[in-house]
Length: 202
Ligand code: ATP
Image 1: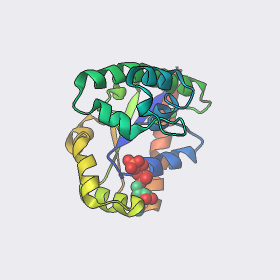
Image 2: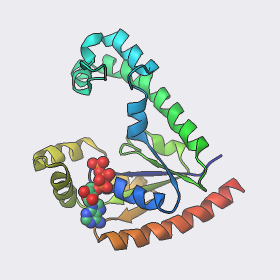
Image 3: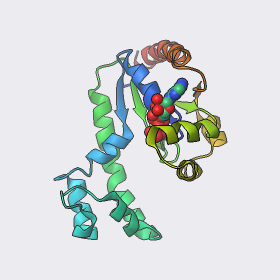
């Protein structure tokens, strides 16, 4: 079995930036958000099940899932939310792990913003949290996405707290410095994960 590192961090912490740097070392990245989109792509079993449950109103004109409409359907509807989670979570896990098993690199990084929230940490060998202050999360995200700081604050509040994330993570990568500093930290972790993967996989 593959050695899997679960990479997480709050909104705008630098997960994509860090995973790109691991990828430059030849490491395969599996992105939980992309997988979650794949399982509800047009023509997918997932999307068909959602449409037969909620109706055509959760579709956009082009046949794609209308996420905003789906969110409205499950808002304040715990049993509908649960129905949706029960449908999608197993599909997402299955596709995630098939992508991981197909990977050719020495270990695999699973990027998941909600790694701890969705208990994916229990399915990986080691967890890595990207950490920055909430102030930096707000400033980097709002300048990247051109959104209001309040919007970013709301998302931060909906995610696991910084304290709990840091407490749960096996390793922490601090992203308050510049990109060169980050690249060095990634290179060091990469060497460590190579060693751990070798030990684990024999
Ligand atoms: P999200 O949770 O929203 O998907 P993320 O955790 O993947 O975000 P990134 O997109 O990697 O975060 O980084 C957020 C923004 O901060 C990007 O515009 C990125 O270029 C910038 N950034 C990341 N690291 C640094 C750094 N060390 N110095 C300056 N800017 C940075």
